[in-house]
Image 1 (tube, helix red, strand yellow):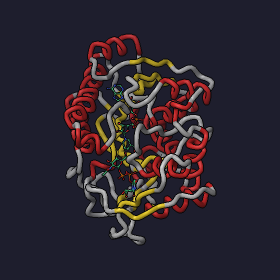
Image 2 (image 1 turned 90 degrees about the vertical axis):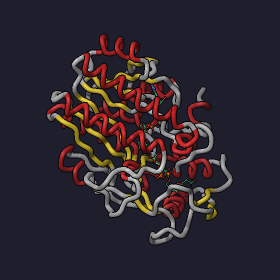
Image 3 (image 1 turned 45 degrees about the vertical axis):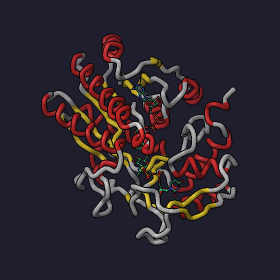
Image 4 (image 1 turned 60 degrees about the horizontal axis):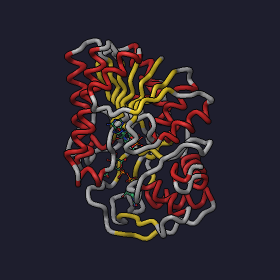
Length: 340
Ligand code: NAD
Ligand code: UD1
């Protein structure tokens, strides 16, 4: 299938492009490089031996997107494009709502006008807000998000559901990612956050490589076995394969459905820091710090629906997550910026 990847130069999009090529599909990347760089696309080419067709385009630009669709002959779209920094979304909410929601509206409009019916959307476990029961199934209550970023995901899910009601030809899969970590085993592509990382794994790996002094563990008085927060970390290559598995499902069904992409297993912050140090043989000094506002005790998926509907299950465990994160970080200590 010819698959348009909006935001395909980013962390999850670049890994998905590789897995799509491995599965015999043709990804076409559309990105404005607001949080990525063309070097990532070069690296996809080095891993796969394929030159990926790439368009520098803002997905909010309706005219440019219409032209892209007129020439693209896409069979499906995977909509990764979006701003994703939780803290930043609190400071500049309007830009977050505008970018994330406008890009989705422009995409849905172009899909409808050009008869493209298959859509996979990058949603997030953040739509579940503060869980009242674990593990989280797709039928768990949503809403109660703690930041504008989370609300954009919640609102976009609703927009896509409404679009699918109005257009019975549309088939949409809302993939709710848990906590993506890790990198491609080649060490050529990985997560490259700008500035101080907000997320745990990039912070740990930057401590290990000497860019940060120590990890602050935000809170050790949570209602969890060791008092530190528990999350469902999922290897980004498993996550990428989840998109490949969603394509045939999307192509053979109509309507809109949400699917969790997680492993079903939760690890604590302390377990993650200690596992990273042990598996890679590098020190990860940490100190306890106050809780981070908006954080919850624990969050992990019930991944049954992904197994039953998509035939997908996470294969990679904590050691691969830690090993591959470190392989990427130590080969690219400054991320893509350090590339020749
Ligand atoms: P990323 O920032 O690495 O990738 C997003 C890409 O979208 C970037 O390449 C960026 O340049 C591009 N982009 C942003 N706005 C655009 C626009 N208007 N037009 C064109 N391109 C645009 O992020 P990621 O981690 O790869 O996340 C991909 C998607 O998955 C995002 O929608 C994110 O919200 C969602 N998600 C990510 C996580 C995570 O932990 N990484 C968790 C849940 C959901
Ligand atoms: C966060 C976002 C979520 C988003 C996801 C992926 C919040 C409330 N949620 O999830 O919307 O979809 O990232 O981008 O921000 N931690 C530390 N020290 C650190 C960093 C993190 O102790 O330096 C802890 C956190 O308190 C948490 C765990 O590590 O317990 C994971 O944090 P993080 O990687 O930021 O992901 P989430 O908070 O689960």
